[in-house]
Length: 134
Length: 138
Image (cartoon, rainbow over all chains, first blue to last red; front, side, top):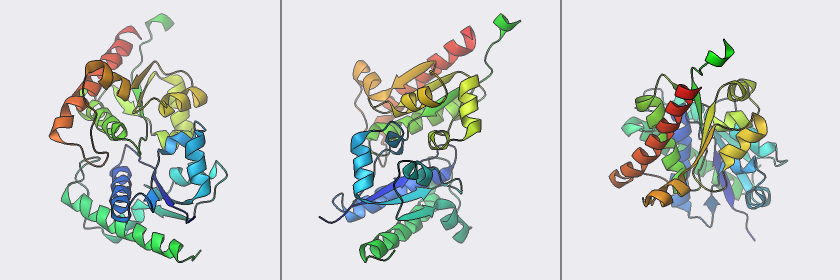
């Protein structure tokens, strides 16, 4: 059976990067469909939720972190799983410095433009992994 | 002197809740408390940073009173806080609170609607009540 892409954002609540990562993932999942890509609650890994750990361990994982602290990647790797790809929202932001989100959760038009950029970047990663490229 | 100690800040620890609509509601309700209702009295603790082992976040939660806010009954924020820092002063579970008050949960995790504002307000007010109790009683 073909593996799914499990895409996990850090969802940091103190910065707009968290919401941007989260929105980009929702956009991508709607685009690809739940049979190809899905997400789950990151913190369920901490409480050793068997269903969540199973999902993460049996599929390919892409993490989307807000910043260089890489909390989503670290939380996945604490469970013994190596992520297939790790993206940072801040890198997309650096490539589009003219776009600034309006608020932490209310991203506004410029924030959503960044979300679309990130969703496209994520799609490229999914395609690359589906081609079997490491 | 010690019995006169009153906490200066209350830490709010929302769950991540990416998978569920209540998780999105958690974020909006907590931000409302942090930004509009009790901006000087509350700080947020970033759950992913906290569980990734950040000592600053964990020590804050050990020293100051906390309120965990979970979207669903798995109570990830509450359980993580108990494991890493100690028992939160209050633990809010949004799915239970909405059920108790007869308020519908949001139907989308991606975007909340004007109708969901009632649920955001309800949860935010519940958190504020708990913040005020902590600040008053210490």
